[in-house]
Structures are given as C-alpha cells and as structure tokens.
Length: 60
Image 1 (cartoon, helix red, strand yellow):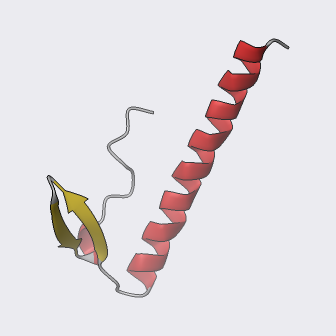
Image 2 (cartoon, one colour):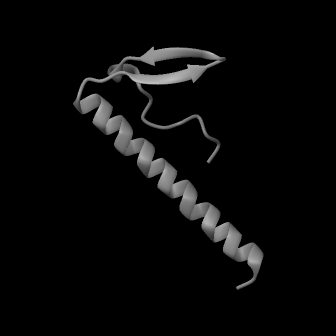
C-alpha cells in the first residue's frame, strides 16, 4: 500500500469518526433537551433540540 492509499484510508476513517461523533452529540442533545450552540456567520446562535439536523451539511 502506498502513501496515497494510506492517506485515503485515514481520511475515510476520520470522516466516519466525525460523523459518528456528530450523531452521538445530536442524540445526547435531543435526549437531554439541550440546545446546540454554534457559530454561524460570526454570530453565536442557539439551535433548539427539535431543530438540530440529523446530518451535517458536509459534502461527504
């Protein structure tokens, strides 16, 4: 396996890990009725648990 293949495999593993972490965070926030605090266009906003998207807007 060359370095490009190793990097591609690592990228896929990291991407899957981030998606799983997001899924668990959303599950936790909804279960505990806790808002999600994010920065959008330089402003800090609060997203109600019922409005938290189940997936990110990521292209992957």
